Each structure stands twice: as structure tokens, then as C-alpha cells.
Length: 380
Image (tube, rainbow, N blue to C red; front, side, top):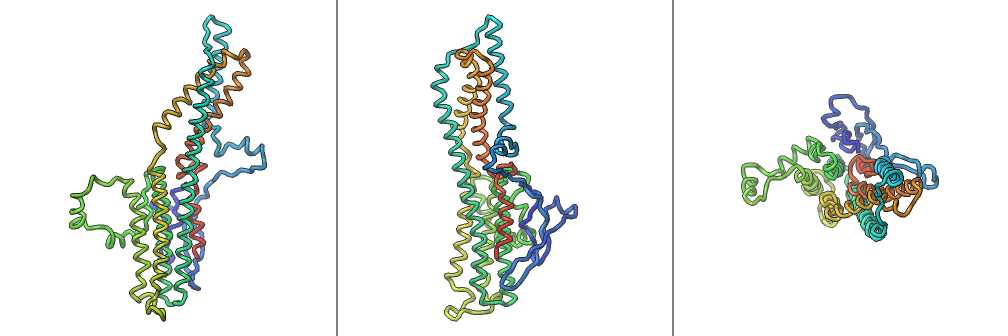
């Protein structure tokens, strides 16, 4: 991801938000309008550098076979060439010296089944985690859009300036929550930027007054019960929870009657309690999806399975030339077979490695920030 840009964060009342790295130089901006019940708020956001994602034409065999961007070929080709050279060296040694390096191939015949099982199982599990992460991301995007749209529909009976301001504030905090969530799940890939670094100063200062605990009272009492100090990762994943609390407070701020003047005839309140529950449920669904993403980010693939699979993989792959030298007599055919066997096994391992961490700036990673930006355009 191009993390130096923050296309989702735009300050209230048309102000521009930039990261500290961008503030030192002028940035071109793009403008778009967000509609809130016939009220338009012009927003300026930094023009983000487009992210080059992996595209291919499945109907073109040539395009699929020879495309290097997003492929595992660049990572696997050194291993393939090394194994080919090793095969050639074994055949040359057996043919022109008195040293016989060939071994029986019966052990490799049995081991091939175990290797195939371990490699395919790992790739299948990694793909399952990959699609699960995409499911949680889709829930985050959907809930953000639905929350704002339902809020606008439920309060369309009031068109006062206070009501319009309240709708803008709820939408703005929803977009900030979405942006901070994207930064939180990418923290492992970019530890230089925490989720708190993407929170606008206006919201950060207000949260300091309302949510952040005082260091002289409650925090001192809780420190006795704490199991240890928070790490940067803990603070990073705490940011979306704090902003979700702020969003809930913003949703209920209309109860005071200062912002939405119009009252309902049945409940004599700006919003029906069931409507508030609907908006609250959207926030809860958002946090549920965030916890699902956090689970995938903080729970790595089981190390013993990775270690065992990779040990068998390298032992099998780099002893196979010695076994082929026992049953094959032509080095060219053996070298060709070794090349594609190495590519197949190590290629699947690298595919699993790509799918293990789909958050970041690799070619096959999710364009989560770009997708979130699209949702911010379509919120209402």
C-alpha cells in the first residue's frame, strides 16, 4: 500500500488533512462532494499515488504464462537454476570420475506423497485465511456505507443546520474509523506508522478529554492490576476501539435536542430508540469485523507445521538430483524435470507465503485503503 498518502482523512469544514511527511511539500488535491440531505460539503483530499495491483487476462495464455508482476517466478527461479546446476554436477561427476553420487529413488517415491500433502495443505489453509480476511474487509466497507445511508434516511425529517452538522460529523467519524482500521491492520507490514498517527488532531484532542483516562486517578489504580505495559502493537489495535466509542457518542449526541430540533410525534425524540439501535448495531458489526481481522493479523500460521513442511521440502527437492541420477542416464531430461519439480514445490510454498499476509504493499496484497476510499465516495 502507498501508506504515505491518507486519501480518506479530510478535515471538517473543507480543511485538508496531510501526514507529517506530506505537509512539507505542496500536494495536488482532488475534490468531491458528499451529499447529506441536500447539503453539500466540499472535501479536499491529497491525490494519492495509484496502487498497481495485479491484473491479468485469463483468456490469454501468453499473458498469464509470461507476466512477471505478481508472479512467484522472480523468487523461485534462483532455486530452480541452482538445482539444475546441482543435477548437472551430479551427472558430470558420475560420468567422468570414479565417484558415484547417485542414490536409490525408492525413498523419494514414498516421500513425494508426504511432500505433496504438506505443501497443498499449507496452500489451502493460507488461501482460506486469505478469503476470510477479504470477507471481514467487505463487512467493514459495507457497514460503513450502510451506517451513513441509514442515518441520513432516518433523520431526513429534520433539515436544520444542526441536523446537517450532526450528519456530517457522524459520517466524518465513520470515515476516520475506517481509515484508522486500515492503518491498524497494516501495522505489522509498516511499523513506522501506527494507527494513532492517522487520527486527525481535532479528534485526537477531543478523545483525550473524554475517553483517555487520567494519569492521576483511574490509570494509577488500574496499573496495579495490569499484567504489563502496553506495546506499540497493543496501542495500535486499541485505536479503532477508541474511535468506535467516539462514534457511538456522536450518534447519541442528538438526544440532547440541540442539533436535531424536529421531534417525532410518537416518541417526542429526534430519533426513535429502535433507529438508534440500528445505528448502534452497525457499529457493533464493524467492531466484530475488526476483531476478525485482528485475529488473522495476530495469529500466524502454526510454526511447527511451517517448519516441518519446509524441512521436508528442501530435503526432498535438493536430494532429488541424486535419485534421478540413479534412474536416468540423460542429463538434459533430468535437468528439465528437476527445473519444473523445483518450480512446482517451491512455487506453491511461495504462493502460501504471499497469502499469509495480505495486508501491505506487495503486488498480491489487498488494496484495502483504495477500496475504503471508494466507499468514502459512496457513503451517501
